[in-house]
Length: 291
Ligand SMILES: [Fe+2]
Ligand SMILES: [Fe+2]
Image 1 (cartoon, rainbow, N blue to C red):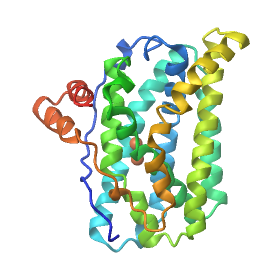
Image 2 (tube, rainbow, N blue to C red; image 1 turned 90 degrees about the vertical axis):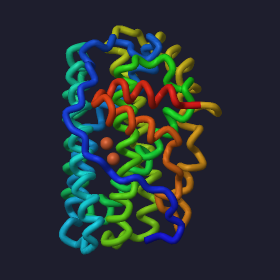
Image 3 (cartoon, rainbow, N blue to C red; image 1 turned 180 degrees about the vertical axis):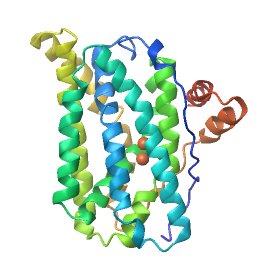
Image 4 (tube, rainbow, N blue to C red; image 1 turned 180 degrees about the horizontal axis):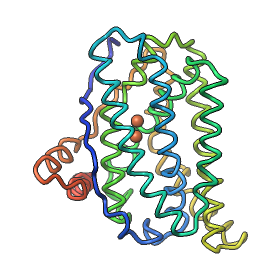
C-alpha cells in the first residue's frame, strides 16, 4: 500500500434508507431553478453511472488476491447499488415533473455499454477510479461549510449527506483495484480524470438547460439564469472551484485517495444514524456540524 496513506474509514453497507423525497418541492435548492436543475442533472446520472462503476470493478474481481480488498470491493458494490436505488427515486420524481429523464438515461446507458464493450478494462477501471475521485470530494465540497447547502431542502440535503459520507468511506476501493491489479498506464490514469470531468460538466450543464426548457423558461430567460448561476457553480469562489487543490492532487505520481483527511464531522453522521436509524436526522446533524 502507498507510503503516504493517512486517513481511512471502512465502508458500512446501509440499505433501504428513506429520505421522504416525495415531500420535496420542485425547486428544492433555495427555490432557485438553475441551482436545482444543475444538481438534478448531476443526480440523474448517478444510478446508471454507479451501475457502470460496479461493472468496471467486476472486470477485475478474479485478479484480486488480497482478501481485504476483496471484502472492500464487495462493500463498494453494495453501497453503489443502494445509491443507485435512492437516486432512481429522485429520477422518478423528476419524471413526474415532466423532465425527459428516460431520454437522458437511454443515452447514458448506450455510452456506458460502448465503453464497456469497445474500450479496454484498463480504461474502464481508470474512468471509474477518476469518477470516484470526484465523488470522494463531495462531502468536503458540499458540507465543510454550512452556507454551501444552507438553502437546500433538508431531505435532499440528507440524501446527499448519506451519499457523500459513503463515497468517502469507499473512495479508495476502485483506486486500489486500479493500482493493485489494473495494470493501468500512468498516462491513462491521468487522462481519465480530465475526460470524466469534461463529460460530467458538459452533460450536467446540457441537461440542466434542457430541464429548464421543460420547466417553461424561454431561451432568453435560460441565458439569464445561466449568467447568474454559473459563477456560483464554477466561478472563482464557486462551489466546485473550492476543491481545486484536492482535485489536482490526482496528478501527483504518488497520489492515493486516503492522503486526504476524512471530513471532520464524519463521526457526527455515523453516531446520529446509529442512535436514531434516521438518515434525515443524521443528515441534518451532519450539515449543522459544518463550519
Ligand atoms: Fe455512490
Ligand atoms: Fe462511489
